[in-house]
Length: 142
Image (tube, rainbow, N blue to C red):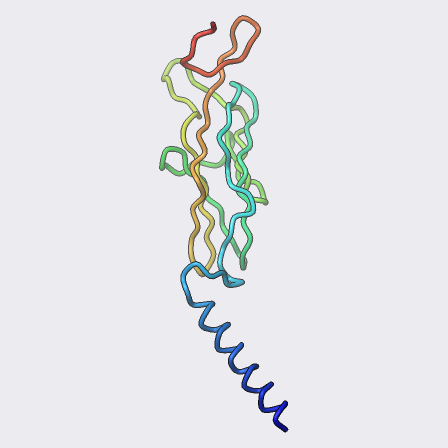
């Protein structure tokens, strides 16, 4: 009988600890979001596809949105968010006439019914091609 009482007390204590821990900040619960892959800094080549990772785990449904320099990235003909959250820019570009570019700081935001999680910022730079080499925009060949 004493063993059974001890087991019930331990079982109740573990149950109480689980409920308490799940409500503490910084302690994960199954419903919270967590990044599996975040975007990384990259050097992109003009007129080539670019993919930035953003893979998240958590209770669904999960929606992924992307921002460049704090502004939402429009999806459509030029860019798409893949099923796994990855951002695909079909033809990375810098438009000469307007000096607009796809380069900048990108982040992704994942959201479910429990909250939102924002990734690290990934710096995307445009590579320039010259004299048979690719180098970063704004830097001179040695």
